[in-house]
Structures are given as C-alpha cells and as structure tokens.
Amino acid sequence: MSFREQDKEMWLIVSDVPRLHGPWPYVVFVLSIVLPGSGTMVAACAGYTTSWSKCQLFIGMLQMMTFVYLIGWIWSIWWGWKILHKSLKADAEDERMLVGRN
Image 1 (cartoon, rainbow, N blue to C red):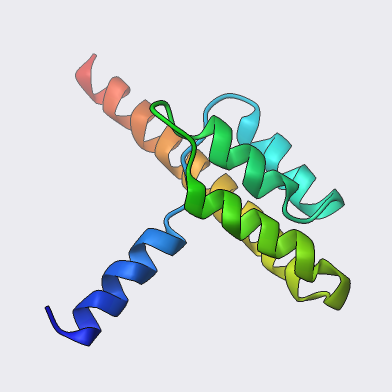
Image 2: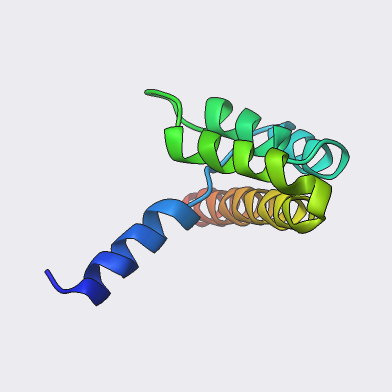
C-alpha cells in the first residue's frame, strides 16, 4: 500500500461522521455551536450501535481544547453541520426508498 492510499484511508476514517436519528442531529448541531466539541463527543456515543467512536471522541476533545483560538469553534460548527447534513440526507434517501416500494 502506497503512502497516498494510506493517506486516503486515514482521511476517510477521520472525516467519516456518524449518522444520527430522530432529534439527535439537531441536538448535536446546537451543542457544537454553544459548547464546541461537546456535540462531536455526543455524536461519538450516540451514533454507533456497537461501541463508541474513539476517533470522534478525540476530535471532540481537540475541538474543545482549541476553541479558545476560534479554530476549534469553527471546526466544531463545521463538524456539527456535517453530522446534521449526513443524517438529514440519509433520512431523505430512506423515505424515497420506502415510497418507491409502496
């Protein structure tokens, strides 16, 4: 495996946000704005059924540690938006699939 392939694989692992259901995407997004990093950490716990995502927890901690420099705050808002967008997009795809079956 070349360095480029390893870099791509690592980027996919780090940048893959969890898909949340119900009110959780909205809660995570608001938490990401109000208290940077907390939304990412909640998503790390609520977004996976088998176990917590250590990578997402670590990202949430980094966002929390760097929010005083505004970098973590902007990063947290962007991450919260990614989680909200992925969850809403997946819900819309599920609805289209269910409507298509009937």
